[in-house]
Length: 398
Ligand SMILES: *Cc1c(COP(=O)(O)O)cnc(C)c1O
Image (cartoon, rainbow, N blue to C red; front, side):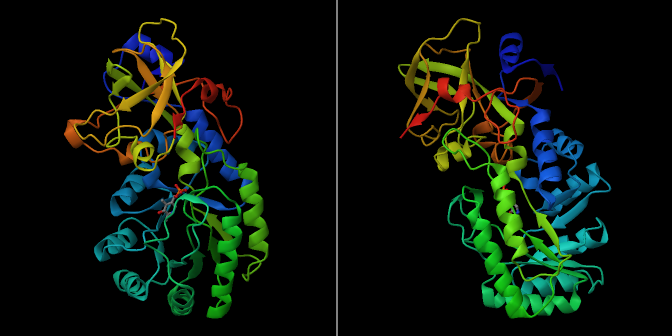
């Protein structure tokens, strides 16, 4: 992988034809070290958020040793790369044979369930192994999350209590888990969820070895400025103290977005400028899924392809590359006047759910990657050079 001082250097020296991820390894290690050093919970990185090998390696470098896999492919990816990693299979609905191979071939011991049928499946597929860690996923409120996840998974309080009491008979270690929703903007979501989990444990009348507070920790975007990460830790720790668990119970978490959002930006090329519209080579079927479908505003900056100074900001319509007319950024986007074919736009903090959402629709979806050494985008982990990009940058209106 090539290293450049900044994305400006990539644009001017390479004029890349493909969308190019600008990888900032020190942003990953900063986030990883923060979780390892400042958050007294064992972090399991949610692999689906960005499974690129260079990102995984930077996380390992930053001290992440545990991984949350959603599928057998993710388990194989992690086991192949890190033979000593601790892997948890945390999709609430798993194919039976995937559970069997996870246990027998890949050394996975940690499984989640939110139903009695899945619990029986896990026990059957592992031949009632004596060394299982079973987490019971509880449904909790997703209020205050930008991307709620409560519609699909999580046992009700009554179901969860029954699951805990049955699982206690078979599990070596037993835990509760939940997910407050992705990009949770309020630390209080954890206070509520952990109080709910505590009540379930009391109803079940069992001892619990692990409290897994899930994912949902935020990143910073042009339109989303969450509270400091320290506020989340303080809320989780205070709530943990109030829970009905053994004094030596373990605390786990499953951060995805918070660990890797700042890992990568994306340098996209302008293929055509027409009136007040530009056509770029990345869109809603690529890394800009959340920008289009969830109306999220990513920080952006324009980079001229030929080094000329760019002008004052004006409003553009920005179209993606596919033939689908829905493939455009919502609203207007502020970018410098006079953008033209051969110029570039850098989209910041797209390391979470960017590359992992990209499809091959219309034959697009290929990308390149290079390491860059600047850090211009806003950060939740200090030491970014500053947030000036947002103010000169490009907020979509409405
Ligand atoms: C997606 C997912 C995560 C990560 O969520 P973020 O909001 O990205 O932190 C964690 N745990 C589970 C079970 C998930 O499905």
